[in-house]
Amino acid sequence: MCLTETLDEMVNSGTLSPELAIQVLVQFDKSMTEALESQVKSKVTIKGHLHTYRFCDNVWTFILQGATFKSDDNSENVGRVKIVACDSKLLSQ
Image (tube, rainbow, N blue to C red; front, side, top):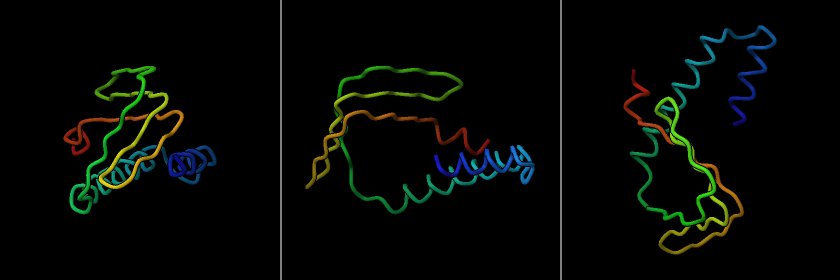
């Protein structure tokens, strides 16, 4: 979110073109996807009450309330979670 806000500020001030800002975000998403695929070895289970879900422009958005994140040796309760997911194949287009 901080990256998006910073890029928005730079576009609004004229420091950066909107096209370049989009390219930066796409490259960041690709890099994060590659890092998660190659470096993350554990799994996490998320449970909670599904408050809202939406599918728009090939992007899923889920809002969970009373969510619990569980891994092999850890469990964390959180109040509200927003999950945004898209097909990673679409990022390369």
